[in-house]
Image (cartoon, rainbow, N blue to C red; front, side, top):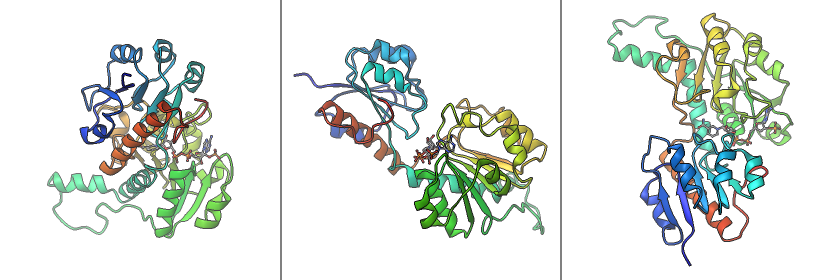
Length: 323
Ligand code: NAP
């Protein structure tokens, strides 16, 4: 019997793939940094038993209509807003993601962004490298304290709770907002549940870690920024579309809030002329929340494990939604 065909939409390291080559016929898009051409993906899906997809691939009706034997789509991310779960369900295709294995790594990056923005680390580094540092001065590159301040986490899930744990080390007051209360986190970490508006009003750092859904799209808009403190810093490590970027630009530009640390943007990748990048008070990273070598390799292996489970007729290890 021929081996099941797995198509991967980006070049992944041979060291991860090789363990599965005896059981699958694996083909990859040959580029690491350039996304798969749509036409190629539409052709490959016609023969594929399984796909490994990236968050930059739109896996929608067009893809599911072309498949003939597809059983599983393994998304190399915990977020799955790039996948049409209803279309997958209609096609009888299981969708999987990579929860838990990236939680600590993404929490580290999120807290790093918070520190970098509050303490103006990138601006300070540019200053030194540009040869601008001529004298010590009492308020040179003076930023804001993080310790003992109030952090407000919107989306207190796996990553949110892990960011909150980091915040306890800085002796911060922790507020959070979800649709539902997490009493366990309240007891373990001493976090306080508040409404969205109260969180915006009371937090020195507002951290967005809720998933992108119809409900959360654009929730950080002009009104939300206006409710924040004028010294507040906004951190987004979730998905760019939760934020009205024009409103965020105006809020920082007009000193309605103090700054932002952003790992994600509405239309990625962004170019250097993106208005938010013209603001000194914005620290930007290229969607690298889970990007440690160890974690990315673990995520890749989890995708392949999920595929193996489904193709062997077992329950996926980490299935999502209605798939
Ligand atoms: P998770 O455990 O599912 O947590 C998401 C949290 O958001 C839940 O606690 C959920 O609580 C809350 N939530 C959902 N809808 C909400 C709403 N309308 N208003 C307020 N809260 C809401 O997910 P996770 O593993 O922590 O990941 C969170 C997100 O981070 C992912 O969806 C992904 O977009 C993003 N992410 C980004 C990177 C990166 O590279 N930057 C890496 C990993 C993940 P309720 O259900 O009670 O509302």
